[in-house]
Structure formats: structure tokens, C-alpha cells
Image (cartoon, rainbow, N blue to C red):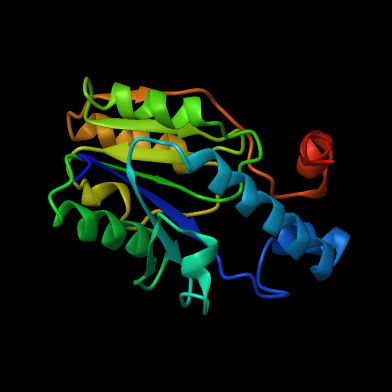
Amino acid sequence: MNKTALIVFQKNEVLGKVKTRLASTLGNVEALKIYQILIAHTHQVIQSVAADTYIFFSDYVPEGYETQASGFYLQVQEGKDLGDRMSNAFEFLFKKEYEQVLIIGTDCATLEQIHIQTAIQKLDLVDVVIGPAEDGGYYLLGMKNLVPSLFADMEWSTEEVLKETINRLTQGGLSYFHIETLSDVDHEEDWDKVKMKFN
């Protein structure tokens, strides 16, 4: 067994339920297409990362997905909000006795294998590794032990998430390291900056 587990939080590919901010200007069909491109990119990036990879779906494991995502473990997220769901996923894997657990989403078109590998290496030296997102959140979070305070009563999807996460780490006396800041694809202008990469 690997000492490292990688969690991928992935929404089920349902028309009208993904990339709603993109859909507000581009429409639901285009938003779903873009989300599928981002998922395919994420899967390609993580394919050769030295970690056991667990895809946690938002609602259910799609039928037949095992063949599409061979080599990945498939799970369903559990919890009442994003913090709850992330905390439960981390706890699930720490109970399997992984020494390091990292989480990413599927919204980052500029994510590359080097970002995840760097985070894994840095986790040998610090308690928590963060991949900051330009919108004030983060696209990656890694830790060696569950830190429940990072997930409770957080105002998710705001520009304060990263700052508040660092505040809580500092208050808890935990060491942390930032890897490179990247941008999530949430709005049409975000997609415009990266879409050439996928043509």
C-alpha cells in the first residue's frame, strides 16, 4: 500500500447541476461540456501520481465508471456541507492508515502533476500543504493528521477561505507550506484564459 492517498472531489455530470456560474453566461450544455473537459484533464494529471487515488462523487458512483477510471477507488461524499464532506473523506482515509492524505477538486485547468508531487514531498517537512487558488480559496489541501478545525464553520466559496484556513493553522501551532497559486475555472473569463489548451 502507498503511504499517500489522493482524494478527488468530483461532481456527478448532471446537466444543470455543474459549473452553475459558467452556465449563467454560457448555458447548461456548454457548462457541462467544459466540466467534462476539466474532469478528463484532472484524471490525466493524477494518472501517474505516486498515491492511491480515491474519486469521491458528490451524489453516486455512476454505473460502469470502474472501466472509465481504472486504477482509481470510487466513493461517495458524505456530509451536510463541503467542510463536512471533506473532513469525512480525510477521516475515512486516515482510518486506512495512510500517512499523508491530499485533496483536490476538478476545477483547475492549469493543475499539473508537478503540483501534486511537490505537495507530497513538502508534506514530509510540514503538517499541512496548501495549493492556493486566485479566488481566495484553495485547489489542494494535504495533511498528515486530520485537522477538524479547518473544515468546521467555514464560509465556503468565499474569498476568505484561504486566509481563514491559515489563521486556524497558525492558532493551532501547525506548520504549513504554500505551493504555486493557480486559478479555478468558475466564470466565463476563467475559461477564456485556458480554453486554447484544450483545442
